[in-house]
Length: 238
Image (tube, rainbow, N blue to C red; front, side, top):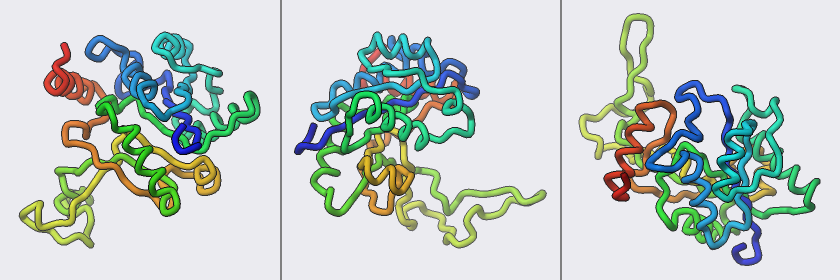
Protein backbone atom coordinates (compact mmCIF):
# COMPACT_ATOMS: atom_id res chain seq x y z
CA UNK A 1 0.00 0.00 0.00
CA UNK A 2 1.14 3.55 -0.70
CA UNK A 3 -0.65 6.67 0.55
CA UNK A 4 -3.69 4.56 1.33
CA UNK A 5 -3.77 3.10 -2.19
CA UNK A 6 -3.79 -0.69 -2.58
CA UNK A 7 -1.61 -2.31 -5.23
CA UNK A 8 -2.07 -5.60 -7.07
CA UNK A 9 0.80 -6.88 -9.22
CA UNK A 10 -0.29 -9.24 -11.99
CA UNK A 11 2.12 -11.42 -13.95
CA UNK A 12 0.63 -12.87 -17.11
CA UNK A 13 2.14 -16.14 -18.31
CA UNK A 14 0.57 -18.38 -20.93
CA UNK A 15 1.67 -21.97 -21.25
CA UNK A 16 1.96 -21.84 -25.03
CA UNK A 17 4.92 -20.03 -26.58
CA UNK A 18 5.72 -20.30 -30.25
CA UNK A 19 8.90 -18.21 -30.33
CA UNK A 20 10.57 -20.08 -27.45
CA UNK A 21 8.61 -23.09 -26.16
CA UNK A 22 8.34 -23.23 -22.37
CA UNK A 23 10.09 -19.86 -22.00
CA UNK A 24 8.23 -18.74 -18.85
CA UNK A 25 9.77 -21.55 -16.79
CA UNK A 26 13.02 -21.94 -18.72
CA UNK A 27 16.02 -21.60 -16.40
CA UNK A 28 17.67 -18.19 -16.67
CA UNK A 29 20.84 -17.76 -14.61
CA UNK A 30 19.69 -20.39 -12.14
CA UNK A 31 16.00 -19.46 -11.83
CA UNK A 32 12.89 -20.06 -13.92
CA UNK A 33 12.28 -16.97 -16.05
CA UNK A 34 9.00 -16.11 -14.33
CA UNK A 35 10.65 -16.22 -10.90
CA UNK A 36 12.62 -13.05 -11.67
CA UNK A 37 9.37 -11.10 -12.09
CA UNK A 38 7.73 -12.69 -9.05
CA UNK A 39 10.68 -11.82 -6.84
CA UNK A 40 10.73 -8.25 -8.15
CA UNK A 41 7.06 -7.85 -7.24
CA UNK A 42 7.52 -9.41 -3.80
CA UNK A 43 10.50 -7.12 -3.11
CA UNK A 44 8.35 -4.00 -3.56
CA UNK A 45 7.52 -2.21 -0.32
CA UNK A 46 4.21 -1.02 -1.81
CA UNK A 47 2.75 -4.03 -3.65
CA UNK A 48 0.08 -5.75 -1.55
CA UNK A 49 -0.16 -8.96 -3.56
CA UNK A 50 1.68 -10.59 -6.44
CA UNK A 51 -0.44 -12.96 -8.47
CA UNK A 52 0.20 -14.98 -11.61
CA UNK A 53 -2.50 -15.47 -14.22
CA UNK A 54 -1.71 -18.61 -16.19
CA UNK A 55 -3.47 -21.43 -17.99
CA UNK A 56 -0.62 -23.85 -17.20
CA UNK A 57 -0.50 -26.04 -14.09
CA UNK A 58 3.26 -26.39 -14.59
CA UNK A 59 3.77 -22.61 -14.58
CA UNK A 60 1.40 -22.34 -11.62
CA UNK A 61 3.49 -24.81 -9.59
CA UNK A 62 6.69 -22.89 -10.33
CA UNK A 63 5.01 -19.59 -9.45
CA UNK A 64 3.66 -20.92 -6.14
CA UNK A 65 7.12 -22.16 -5.22
CA UNK A 66 8.48 -18.66 -5.89
CA UNK A 67 5.89 -17.11 -3.56
CA UNK A 68 3.22 -15.82 -5.94
CA UNK A 69 -0.51 -16.21 -5.43
CA UNK A 70 -2.32 -18.50 -7.89
CA UNK A 71 -5.98 -17.90 -7.08
CA UNK A 72 -7.18 -19.74 -10.20
CA UNK A 73 -6.09 -21.32 -13.47
CA UNK A 74 -6.87 -18.94 -16.30
CA UNK A 75 -9.82 -20.02 -18.48
CA UNK A 76 -8.91 -21.41 -21.90
CA UNK A 77 -10.68 -18.58 -23.73
CA UNK A 78 -8.25 -16.12 -22.14
CA UNK A 79 -5.19 -18.11 -23.19
CA UNK A 80 -5.60 -17.95 -26.97
CA UNK A 81 -3.52 -15.98 -29.46
CA UNK A 82 -6.37 -13.48 -29.76
CA UNK A 83 -6.92 -12.88 -26.04
CA UNK A 84 -5.52 -9.53 -24.94
CA UNK A 85 -3.63 -8.50 -21.82
CA UNK A 86 -6.51 -6.17 -21.00
CA UNK A 87 -8.94 -9.11 -21.00
CA UNK A 88 -6.63 -10.99 -18.64
CA UNK A 89 -6.23 -8.03 -16.26
CA UNK A 90 -9.95 -7.34 -16.14
CA UNK A 91 -10.63 -11.03 -15.46
CA UNK A 92 -8.21 -10.93 -12.52
CA UNK A 93 -9.82 -7.80 -11.07
CA UNK A 94 -13.30 -9.28 -11.39
CA UNK A 95 -12.18 -12.49 -9.71
CA UNK A 96 -10.69 -10.71 -6.71
CA UNK A 97 -13.73 -8.46 -6.36
CA UNK A 98 -16.31 -11.23 -6.68
CA UNK A 99 -14.44 -13.92 -4.75
CA UNK A 100 -12.58 -12.02 -2.04
CA UNK A 101 -14.33 -8.64 -2.08
CA UNK A 102 -10.96 -7.01 -2.65
CA UNK A 103 -10.73 -3.81 -4.68
CA UNK A 104 -7.27 -2.63 -5.66
CA UNK A 105 -6.60 1.00 -6.57
CA UNK A 106 -3.65 0.36 -8.89
CA UNK A 107 -2.67 -2.56 -11.10
CA UNK A 108 0.99 -3.32 -11.82
CA UNK A 109 1.48 -5.46 -14.91
CA UNK A 110 4.83 -7.27 -14.83
CA UNK A 111 5.73 -9.14 -18.00
CA UNK A 112 7.83 -12.24 -17.26
CA UNK A 113 9.66 -11.72 -20.55
CA UNK A 114 11.25 -8.53 -19.16
CA UNK A 115 13.37 -9.76 -16.23
CA UNK A 116 15.94 -6.93 -16.33
CA UNK A 117 14.42 -4.85 -13.54
CA UNK A 118 16.54 -2.86 -11.16
CA UNK A 119 15.84 -3.09 -7.43
CA UNK A 120 13.78 0.10 -7.15
CA UNK A 121 12.13 0.32 -10.59
CA UNK A 122 8.66 -0.73 -9.43
CA UNK A 123 8.64 1.39 -6.29
CA UNK A 124 10.09 4.42 -8.09
CA UNK A 125 7.30 4.13 -10.66
CA UNK A 126 4.68 3.84 -7.92
CA UNK A 127 6.14 6.84 -6.10
CA UNK A 128 5.95 8.88 -9.30
CA UNK A 129 2.40 7.94 -10.29
CA UNK A 130 1.12 8.58 -6.76
CA UNK A 131 2.87 11.97 -6.67
CA UNK A 132 1.27 12.81 -10.03
CA UNK A 133 -2.07 11.04 -9.52
CA UNK A 134 -4.08 14.22 -10.14
CA UNK A 135 -2.43 14.65 -13.56
CA UNK A 136 -1.84 11.06 -14.72
CA UNK A 137 -3.68 7.77 -14.64
CA UNK A 138 -0.84 5.46 -15.63
CA UNK A 139 2.93 5.13 -15.91
CA UNK A 140 4.89 3.00 -18.38
CA UNK A 141 8.54 1.94 -18.45
CA UNK A 142 10.23 3.09 -21.66
CA UNK A 143 13.71 2.74 -23.14
CA UNK A 144 15.30 4.77 -25.90
CA UNK A 145 15.52 2.92 -29.21
CA UNK A 146 18.75 3.00 -31.15
CA UNK A 147 17.26 2.06 -34.51
CA UNK A 148 15.42 5.32 -35.08
CA UNK A 149 12.08 5.22 -36.97
CA UNK A 150 13.39 7.76 -39.48
CA UNK A 151 15.85 5.22 -40.89
CA UNK A 152 13.49 2.25 -40.89
CA UNK A 153 12.53 0.77 -44.26
CA UNK A 154 9.64 -1.22 -45.65
CA UNK A 155 9.36 -3.44 -48.70
CA UNK A 156 6.83 -2.49 -51.37
CA UNK A 157 6.77 -5.02 -54.18
CA UNK A 158 10.45 -5.21 -55.17
CA UNK A 159 11.51 -1.85 -53.74
CA UNK A 160 12.80 -0.64 -50.39
CA UNK A 161 11.02 2.51 -49.26
CA UNK A 162 10.94 4.75 -46.19
CA UNK A 163 8.83 3.17 -43.47
CA UNK A 164 7.44 6.51 -42.32
CA UNK A 165 7.24 8.95 -45.20
CA UNK A 166 6.33 11.81 -42.91
CA UNK A 167 9.58 11.53 -40.93
CA UNK A 168 12.60 13.53 -42.06
CA UNK A 169 15.47 11.21 -43.01
CA UNK A 170 18.71 12.37 -41.41
CA UNK A 171 22.20 10.95 -41.44
CA UNK A 172 22.72 11.42 -37.70
CA UNK A 173 20.51 9.92 -35.02
CA UNK A 174 21.00 12.95 -32.78
CA UNK A 175 19.29 15.16 -35.36
CA UNK A 176 15.97 13.45 -34.61
CA UNK A 177 13.67 13.62 -31.63
CA UNK A 178 14.47 10.77 -29.27
CA UNK A 179 12.27 7.71 -29.80
CA UNK A 180 11.24 5.29 -27.07
CA UNK A 181 9.79 1.78 -26.85
CA UNK A 182 7.59 0.55 -23.95
CA UNK A 183 9.58 -2.34 -22.53
CA UNK A 184 7.76 -4.53 -20.00
CA UNK A 185 9.63 -3.63 -16.82
CA UNK A 186 6.26 -2.41 -15.49
CA UNK A 187 2.96 -0.92 -16.58
CA UNK A 188 1.01 0.71 -13.76
CA UNK A 189 -2.55 1.95 -14.18
CA UNK A 190 -5.43 3.00 -11.98
CA UNK A 191 -8.09 0.29 -11.71
CA UNK A 192 -10.86 2.76 -12.54
CA UNK A 193 -9.04 4.00 -15.65
CA UNK A 194 -8.25 0.49 -16.86
CA UNK A 195 -11.92 -0.46 -16.71
CA UNK A 196 -13.15 2.78 -18.26
CA UNK A 197 -10.61 3.24 -21.06
CA UNK A 198 -9.85 -0.45 -21.64
CA UNK A 199 -6.11 0.14 -22.05
CA UNK A 200 -2.82 0.33 -20.15
CA UNK A 201 -2.02 3.43 -22.22
CA UNK A 202 -4.80 5.80 -21.17
CA UNK A 203 -5.03 9.41 -22.31
CA UNK A 204 -2.96 10.66 -19.38
CA UNK A 205 0.13 8.44 -19.12
CA UNK A 206 3.55 9.39 -17.79
CA UNK A 207 6.84 7.49 -18.06
CA UNK A 208 9.80 5.89 -16.30
CA UNK A 209 12.98 5.72 -18.37
CA UNK A 210 14.98 2.53 -17.97
CA UNK A 211 18.67 2.02 -18.67
CA UNK A 212 20.14 0.86 -21.98
CA UNK A 213 20.92 -2.67 -20.76
CA UNK A 214 17.28 -3.16 -19.70
CA UNK A 215 15.94 -2.61 -23.21
CA UNK A 216 15.36 -6.26 -24.07
CA UNK A 217 12.36 -8.60 -24.02
CA UNK A 218 12.39 -12.35 -24.51
CA UNK A 219 10.45 -13.39 -27.59
CA UNK A 220 12.82 -16.03 -28.93
CA UNK A 221 16.04 -17.91 -28.20
CA UNK A 222 18.26 -15.06 -29.34
CA UNK A 223 16.61 -12.64 -26.92
CA UNK A 224 17.00 -15.22 -24.16
CA UNK A 225 20.70 -15.67 -24.85
CA UNK A 226 21.22 -11.90 -24.96
CA UNK A 227 19.50 -11.34 -21.62
CA UNK A 228 21.31 -14.26 -20.03
CA UNK A 229 24.66 -12.73 -20.94
CA UNK A 230 23.55 -9.24 -19.89
CA UNK A 231 22.63 -10.60 -16.45
CA UNK A 232 26.04 -12.25 -16.16
CA UNK A 233 27.78 -9.05 -17.16
CA UNK A 234 25.70 -6.45 -15.26
CA UNK A 235 24.77 -8.45 -12.17
CA UNK A 236 27.78 -10.79 -11.96
CA UNK A 237 25.56 -13.85 -12.24
CA UNK A 238 26.64 -17.27 -13.44
